[in-house]
Length: 208
Image (cartoon, rainbow, N blue to C red; front, side):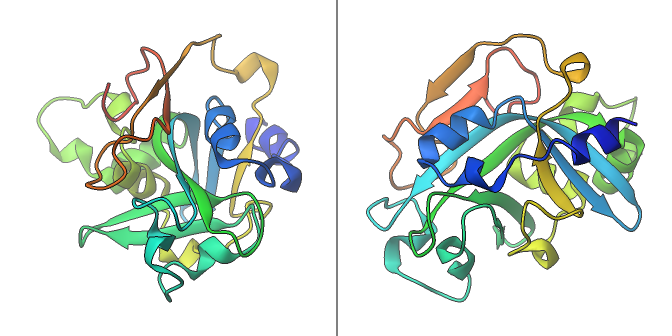
C-alpha cells in the first residue's frame, strides 16, 4: 500500500528544474524508491551534497564533457550514477537545465521499505551480532548497494517506475527535523563550499 502511495506522489519533473542548492536542501525527508527484479527497497533521504557547473572544482564537469559524466548535461530529473574508488556506485539527481552540468548527490538514507533485502545486499548479517538498520545506507556507496542501484540505472528518468523520489504520505513522513548545512566531505577540491545538508541527529547520516 505504501509503495502505491509513493508511486502516486513522485516529485514532478519541475522539482528538478531549479537551483541545485534548493533541490539538495528540499530532498531531505523525501523517499527514494528503487524497484529491481529481486524486490523493492526505499528510504528517507537524510543527507545530500550539491555539485554545480564547470566552475566547481569538485564537480565531475570541471574538466568538461566526458563519456563518464555526459548524463550531467542531460535533462534535469535524470539519475546520474557513476562508479568511484573502484568498488562503489553513487547516485545523483541531475538538476537545473539541460546542457548545464549540475547535480545533487544522495549521501545518506534512512531505511523504510525492503530492509531484509538491504541486509542481504549489504551482507551485514555475516557480521557478529545483529547489525543496526541505520548502518545499511549511511553513506553514498552503501546507499546504492542497499537499494541495488548500479550503472544500469544511469540516465534513467526519476519519473520511471524503477527509480524515483516521492513525497511520503503525511502518516509515513519523518517527524519535523532541523537541517544542518556544512561544507562537503570526501573530496579534495572545492572543500570550502557549504553545499552539504543533512537531517540533524539522524543516525543514517554518513558523518556528523
